Length: 421
Image (cartoon, rainbow, N blue to C red; front, side, top):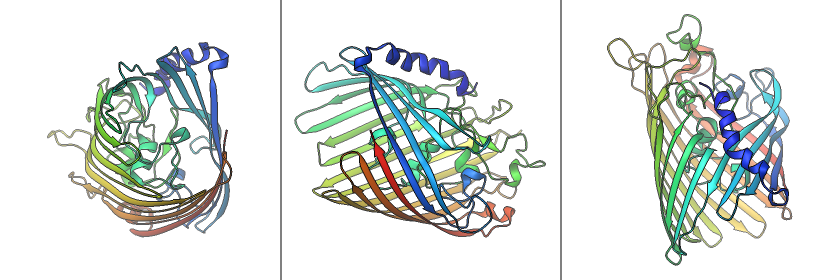
């Protein structure tokens, strides 16, 4: 079952109440992000290559200068009484779906929030629909974007690519004066292919958000080509499909000293059955744990995150998995603000270890790191200019099968002009 089949349920639960709300109560917000990009020579993974960044040369193996409409988002919020609200985020992809080469509008999030407050010290929350799990420390602004850089960390990039909750979350927060201690748990479906990209693409660095109907390109690595051990798999992944009917979960806890410190831990497990194949996609049993912290010291902000996990797919006659990979990533970032100016620097490290018995036929090992530096300027309340350079260096043995060097160093320079409304 794909999320195309889930979509009417999601929209009924979320947009139905929103559209039924009093027209005066509906709040429309959005952003438009226009981009100038100087690419590296490497073909982007979004175009079926093994490049680590969002943009690569569209034609030929040479550097290119691109003008792109990188994000167009519309977020609609509507109150549903005193303690509930509905939210829908739609993204228009002006760059087009790489598989069918057309632009389209897709659902990114669609949910209903219930926010009762039994007392000034206790806040309860329930969320129902499709939404991001509370893993990222960077994406806390409009349309799941961040204030620090153009390109988020490898961890946040992966969440935007492969993770979306279709289910229900409950949260309880105690708020003694100046502090908040919260716990949350969720049950969900529709995220069974999560792990496909980490295994067959590796980590990436990009700010694109996958929509409900997206089919993300995979490079022509031998294991999924005709004659390969996973040749029945298509050369694309649709991350939000329901394949095995099993319910996944995550549990989270956080502590805040308001305005100073924010610490979060999350454990995620999609509980997918790795032995199930629905004729188009495999189910990947993916679980991970994440710990993140954000320290605010006047104009200086320090952020860090560590995430590690394991993903398993397939079942051989002897019971062992066809793909068995462990993975981890971490980053540290400093961000300094002075009035309308913000300067940020981040270091990412990432790793995938292939521990199955098909390493020769399907080598998913990867080791890499990245540096990001960004300058952002707020031009009034609704406009932002940003300039960023990202350099990613990685070793990925699967490149050799495509006639590429195993070791690659990729550099992307971007300039962004963002308008919010």
